[in-house]
Amino acid sequence: MSHNQFDNKSQAWSALFSEPMSELVKRYTASVFFDKRLWQADITGSLAHAEMLAAQGIIAATDYAAIQKGMTQIWSEIEAGAFEWKLDLEDVHLNIEARLTQLVGDAGKRLHTGRSRNDQVATDVRLWLRSEIDLIGGLLTDLQRALVDVAEQNVDVILPGFTHLQVAQPVSFAHHLLAYVEMFSRDAERFADVRRRTNRLPLGSAALAGTTYPLDRERVARTLGMVDDAGQPQVSQNSLDGVSDRDFAIEFTAAASLTMVHISRLSEELILWMSQNFAFVKIADRFTTGSSIMPQKKNPDVPELARGKTGRVVGHLMGLITLMKGQPLAYNKDNQEDKEPLFDTVDTLKDTLRIFAEMIGGQVNPATGEKSGGITVNAAAMRAAAQKGFATATDLADYLVKKGLPFRDAHETVAHAVKVASDRGVDLSELPLDVLQQFNPHIADDVYQVLSLEGSLNARNVIGGTAPVQVRQQITRHRQRLG
Image 1 (cartoon, rainbow, N blue to C red):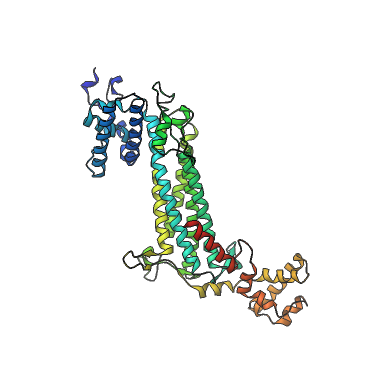
Image 2: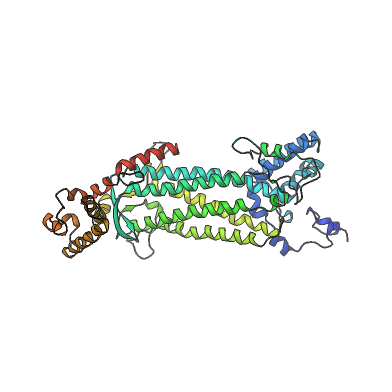
């Protein structure tokens, strides 16, 4: 039976087969309805490939000109929503190639010279992900700036620092927020590192073994901006690895998972801080919802959902690792399954970063320049909480050490003082001097400055400490770093 006797002749490989693909298998194996988002990368990569083929004399200059013209029309059609995506053509690559051939004839058929869908898709995903990493870098900067803005307004606001969710020592609220700035700055570094390994060209690896055509792979890499910091072209050095490597996707999803973990930790704190038992902060109403039966409720849905979506992204990381763990070289159809988790990870992360930057820092009205929203800080509630739980006990121990007592003895002495204060229902700073002197005769009037919240903060005047002078220096450093 000739393949012309049934309707799968549009498939690039159909001449070999004696029966058409079943409709069920078409739907099961097709990827066009999710990988069509790669269309810009596909056209960009194809044009760079075609330019090189013409420069190498592999195709005629007239063919390259026709390909350029056809791709320009296809780009316009897709942007306008007029392009017809066909399930029969399986994926974004064959859909675009078929339309190109329809528009420019044999020149469109010559575009695929020296390449395979295996190295084509690997290139497309890398090009697409590179641009997404650049967008994510900008969003991470926006979130860090929002945190720095709030921190700058709250350097002298004191809240209890916790360990084990128990009151530990007083800290500046700004210092607390800047801890997340540090986390997100590391995230940005990780994404920049992932970008370097993503920005390598597999095109020219062909199906798995390279090609017999005299391709100039480095020319394509330069055209596509796949170069290192010194401008040197970056191409894969092994064709088998070039078509089958998905490390970059796994690395990206790992970096995204860490970012989402940091978002989730911040979410958990916002949820606690918003609760009536803490009442440390409020977030704008547009980031909350009400209850269907309890009219007094304002639920922190955005932080809660972000905390939940963290599991979604971490799940994608596990899925991608599992996808690759049993694959022999080189390309396998399994790798079609890399795109949906990668795409969803990118979408989830970008949406989360955008909404958190606005939820924390507010939104600027472009017409008036005024900012609305953002978190509202309840400094009084934070201070009251810091005065519970004997947050300055360590300061008293340090005070005794400076008076000559070994730290372990000072630690035990302060524990006895805390017990007395607890029995009396007062803070250490509220114990009379004569009572404090019963624990150690070297205690003097200056102890009350040490036991104050401000004294505790100011005493931690070391790099990375919570002393306001140090916090302001860190804010300046972040401002300079973020631009």
